[in-house]
Length: 150
Image: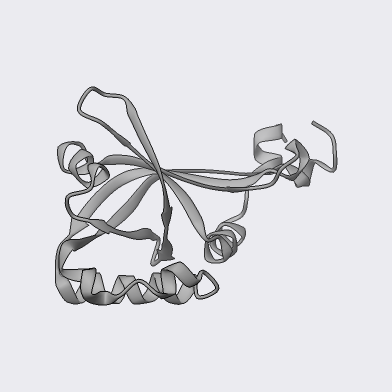
């Protein structure tokens, strides 16, 4: 078995990892083709990644222009502790107010220990959108599976 296969997370491990993680990096492409990477709260649901953003934010403008995005969730400090999931996919922008409000509540519930997220009023929902990333390609890694051999 090659090293890549040894460190890959199983589908169940990926699900648990994404359920427990709090932050993700969302990468879009700006108008000049350069990566634009931002930290986001997120929720993994039904095989997709959900985030919310202000509709006029740069990341949303980038997605309207090019819906191809990447999302990376990772943990670990030392190389032997690195774990993560990278998703490349297409991002849908959902502007339906009830859907935005529900996503905001769900993400807030996941991050309930984060007091700044819990204090965010739903009054901002009319200005927000849901970013729904539909995975096309997923890579994952858990270097601890190598038992210190790297």
